[in-house]
Image (cartoon, rainbow, N blue to C red; front, side, top):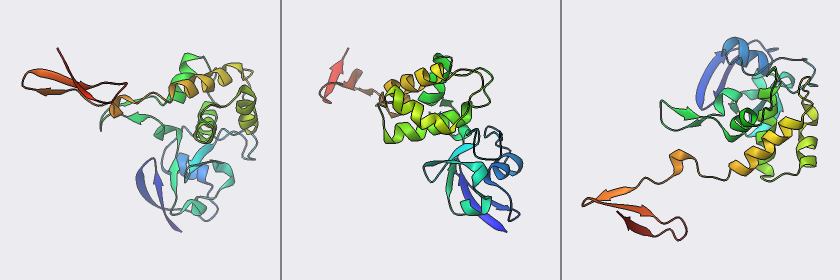
Length: 189
């Protein structure tokens, strides 16, 4: 059957077999191998992606069921600074800073699950983070640094991204910028 799915902001039209799982469509047809296949039974969470903004285990969804949907994979989490450059998402940066990964196999699913959590609860407690991660299995870390990484991201997600910061305005050889406390335009020398 023919499907059309927007994946990481790009519209993809594909021919798929009726029985093709979304995880296999992403990996085998679109070559987005960051979404991992761990158990094929929805137990491990390694295949977690966002479908229309909600975290789902892509081994539980047929590709045909995603027809007309918007899908975000781990490859789509980076923040675009420009058409040619990007920076890590705060969760990706948090996993790096807090050593939230060892083998890395579970990391994409953990990040996708955590992103859904932080979207609904921007300042979760440790208990809330652990509860949100119950559907994701890590065999290496013991979860402590994963929780720390998510807490790190929660505290760093509120800062404006570099591409959202206003650029200083140069006029008549004077530099003007916005005062961060009042929002007023002020002259700097």
